[in-house]
Structure formats: structure tokens, C-alpha cells
Image 1 (cartoon, rainbow, N blue to C red):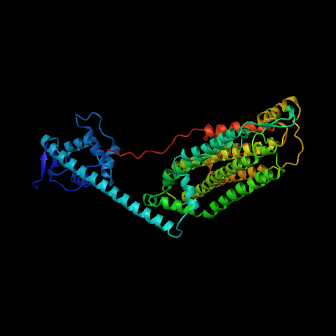
Image 2 (spheres, rainbow, N blue to C red; image 1 turned 180 degrees about the vertical axis):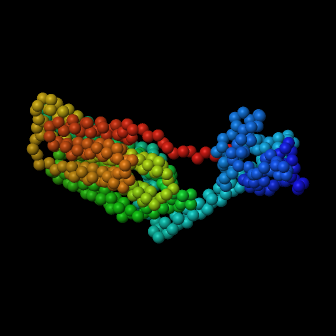
Image 3 (tube, one colour; image 1 turned 45 degrees about the horizontal axis):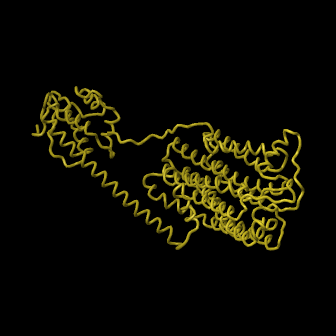
Length: 520
């Protein structure tokens, strides 16, 4: 019998030999030789160790009251990076040391050293992988940026929605607050005009929902939800469908996907700045204020025409210029967020359809979270359009204030009467722009529903989301169409607000994703 093979306490003993390998290699060798196993009539080990036999032997140790889990022992037999705890090294040392105190002490030192080598090798491998990933990511970005040097509107726009969920919303809110304070200093924040007390109409800046609620509440929330969704998709959701090797190039692949929509971003930017901003300001404000009249209803922007004692024409031109510049930039952010939603939905559909990495539960959870994020933003986008259309209809109505106008419309149903709105030839350009906002907002939602939300597992959630979006859209379309429209509008808004706070719509799903714990 070789000098390092002995029999101790009726068991096959293999003496420590200062093995230079890691724990996995040492453990594999000892279990194959049957170190610590009972000996047969020839003085040899009675077969190699198996996971079941080793669990039984460790659990039989008198001082081990808790035993050991079979899965833990099975991990030791597998070729992976999982280590072993100090407590379990103690039990293995007693097994391999054949319950001899001195031999067990020697094996404990040997196993501990092998464990340290495994830990060091694992850390070195992770550092190497991280370095390779950084190099590959740099190469991907170089490939991405090399063809087109300089400014990229698509990438810059995406970067705005990839940062803190507080920065962009707070900037939009701060801009709205600044305009509100400016209107206060100019004296147009709360002002009426009319021939008699009975015909006085409130046209103050702070009474216009398309400049208060829109930019102080709905648009900041929209941007916050877009940022939350994009950050989740880039850092968690997208990686669910990729292998470890593919994850290193995920950022570059996503950036190329964004870059592919460059023309869309530029088109939207030019429309928002050129038409919604500059041309609209010239047509609605500059021409009206310069010529002394126009085809548009009087509001805070053209108040200088009827209340020159409150604000002068030059002041009105300067204030409306800043307000429209702020407005068109904010609306570009709105449309950029919608483009990102469309891109994200397509990206999810594309990689999920070619991936066999994610489990069905994980894929369902990620897809549902994406659809809920798009659903929230869709509701906010329709609310933005609703604010625009409400203000436009109010200005051409007989209401003395927008709140009183809505309340009187509700009461008209109870009284059986109808609120009469005077016939006039005023133009309502906001009707058209608000309709564009509604259509653009609903497009990513329905696209996402078709691409990723019509499976059997999504059917119930998709139906509920679609019903709420439809109800809110109908409420928007029916503004001013009949007496009592405000009741339908309020119902839609209340349901939509509920959807913002609870996008799961009352159905709580428990995550089935299991944590990858290191078993030791």
C-alpha cells in the first residue's frame, strides 16, 4: 500500500500532500479515491463518494446537529465557481481525516488553502472578464461613433432619459414655475376682461391648464416614468434575454438601435421647434399683437389687445416668445419619449423572439413591466392633450372661468338644460395639435400591445389597459360635443389616475424570479 494510503478507525485514509490545486480539484480527487470511506476486505475504499453518501456521513457526525443539505453537497461535485463555508470545511476534514483529530486538523488546513486558491482564481477570472468587457464595449462605441463624428440628436435625446429620474422632471417643473412667477410680475397671472361684470372672462396665465397642470404635473410625471422604464430596460430587462457573452455588447447594440431612428428624432425636432414653436408664435401671437387683432380668442398671450393697462404689446411679445420656446422644447421631449417607447417595444419583441436564455416567467415579468410603463405614459400623454383641448374650448365658450364652465356643464345634465356656447369664428389650432399628441401617444401603446402584449398570459392585463386608454381618449374627443361631456371626462380622468398609481390594475403578481445564491 502506498505510504500515503492508510487505514484509520476502519476507514480509508489519504494523507494530505500539500496539493497545489483549488478546492474543486482537491475535492474531486478525494471523493473519487473514497478518502474516509469504510474499507473492504482488501483494505481498499468501499467505492467513491457520492453526494448522497457524503450527506449521510456528514449528518452522522455527532457534533453536527443541523446536518447538511443535499443541494449544497451536489454543488461541491459540480464544475462551477461556488466555494465552501468554513463550517463545512470542518465537516469534510473530519470525514477525510477518518475522525482522527490530528488528521482532521491537517485536512482542515489543506482544504482551507485549496478554498483560498479557488477564491483567488475566481476573482482573477472576474477581473479578466470585466477588462475584456470594457475593451469590447469601447470597441463597440468606437464602431458606433466612427462613421458619424460629432453631434447625434438621437443619442443625446436618449441620454437625457437615461439619467436620474429627478433631473429632467424637476427642470421642466422649474421652467413652468419660472413662467408662472413671470406672469405674476407682469400682472397677467389672474386677470379678467369683458364689457360688463356679467361677461367678465378669466384669462389669467395661472388659470390655463395647458400651462399649469400640463407642465407642472403631467409632463414631469411622463418624463419620470420614461426614465424609469429606459433605465430598467438597459440595466435589467434587456440583459434577461442575453447570454453572459452577449451582455458585454448590450449597451452598444442598444445604442445602434437608437441611432437607427436619427431621422425620426430630427424630423420631430424640426417640427416642434419650427412649426409648433416659431411658426405658431408668429401666427398666433406676433401677427395678432402687431396688427391689433386676429382670428383667435383673447387669452393671456393677447391680453395686451384688450387690457393695455395690464400689459403692453412689447412685454406680451417677449413673454410669449419665452413661453413658446419653453413649450416647443418640452413637447420635443414628449415626442422623444414616445419614440423611445416605440424603440423599446420593438427591441423587446426582437430579442425576446430570438432568445432562449430567459425563462417563461422572467420573460413574462419583464414584458409586463415594460407594458405597464408604456401604459402609464400613454395615460399622461392623453391628459396633456386633454388640457390643451379644454383650454381651447373654454376660450371660445360663454364660461366666466374654466372651473365654472365645467361645473355648469355637469349641472346642466341634472337641470335638464344645456349650456349654450356662442357661435363665433375663432380659430382653434390647439384642437389639431392636441389630436396629434393623442394619436402619437397611443401609437407606442398599441404597437407594444400588438408586439408583446397579446399573448394569452397578457390577455387580461391588455384588455384592462386598452379599456382605460379608450375611455380616456373618448373623454378627450367628446370635450364640448354635448351637454354633460365633463362627467364622462371626469370618470375617465379618475380611472386614469388610478391606473397611474396602480398600473397592475388591482392584480398583484408575485415575482417568480429566483435569486442566484452562492450555496456553501
